[in-house]
Length: 625
View 1: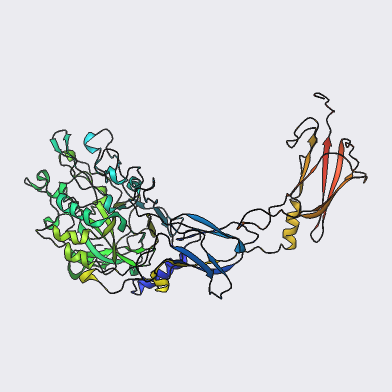
View 2 (view 1 turned 120 degrees about the vertical axis):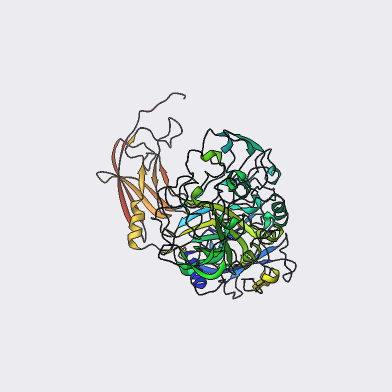
């Protein structure tokens, strides 16, 4: 399921986060977007009410949901008057009919992402929404495989973030291409990102060089292999990343260097008389070599230093796990090579890679006479602002601050990088600019919704070692932290029609075809003449007269739906036939003459309706007799 928080829950979360809380507790989901599927199947019998559904297995004190677990549903609060037990265990997707209340419950266990037991392989499409639906969209990203320089061979794989296609090194992870669809997601599962060398490519005027690529993944070959082995795609979380100009909701975070090894180990850039270097000669995933900043802007429009060492800043928003309500550590980075300098090329606007604020732009490429002799320098991408979401409870990025300090050993970074779950490069839409730092940066509050399959499971207290903040479970503990859900049906119960609605229903009574010119679609041979009087109530009297008032035919309806066969029937009775067929004969079986007729419908307790009908009979056709 694509689970999505309700507007009220999102507002409650933001109130909690603004006041310093890191969780909310009970979450409410938008209608039709919860962890279980509830659907009304019988609008006439559906009843308003509140219900509780909890999973039951062999041991509610352990930390595992058994594959053969079942569920039990009661009223909420439970007064003992109603109880439904699932017909099948959760290892089978099953839609169970709750006939007494007119709805169905669909529940089925799913596998972790990457289990390779379905074509989607755990993939669920992401979404981007804006708080103001009329706002101009600003969020943009470079999808996998985008080619900024069509026809230039060395550019072909610059934005190949993953290697999941047939014949590529990670193809075995995703045989049917389900997970590969994340390449077009605003942020990508970090586990899927490929850091490995991609061979040599010829570059005009330069010769053979290693194929270069722009990516949010750490491009340290040996260390990233360790990260992959310790991460696991099954740890992928369902997250909302919220971008907002409300500084009360901003997240304290590390700001990292995003210039990868194709910049920092490139002698074409770092050598010569005017070397092109990152600030402080920092490497990818080092803390930025700039003073830490606060939320306020100085006279120059840049963030003011706050005296908290270096490399700390603010993410303009927050990340939250939509299954637990837990606020998460989220951080970002920029490529500090991109500063205002003629040696780099030409910027459409001031460079945004060395200012400690999240201000990507829409400019994809730098231009200069010799730009492509200095690869990957031309790939500016608005300052290469990368966003990283973790699975760790929010604590102002302590583990990342401690482990992203410059160090001769890359293994220190492994301890933190392995906690990242989603990552991606963020830019802006063409002709859209971020706001100033003083105004809050974000032009329109946006939510990036990142989703993946996640099985029903027991909520656990994870031990984060020296970074552990105590029991981080957000559930109430009811049902032994095994799944428990409550849902409410309101405003769905059928109500009696008022007189206006009754009149509208009577107005729907009709006769078809009208006029009748010798034929209708209801006739099955040349010997039949059929028109239908439709949308009739179950109990009524239909009388047919000539225009002069002469009686022709009468039908007395008192329809009762038949009782369907089988166990646990969805309906107590089948739908009645809402129409009658008139064979254009009078009450003695004699065909009527062509002309105008009045059809009067009288429904006791409801009202009356009179229709005028014109028909022309066709000549009798004896062929085939």
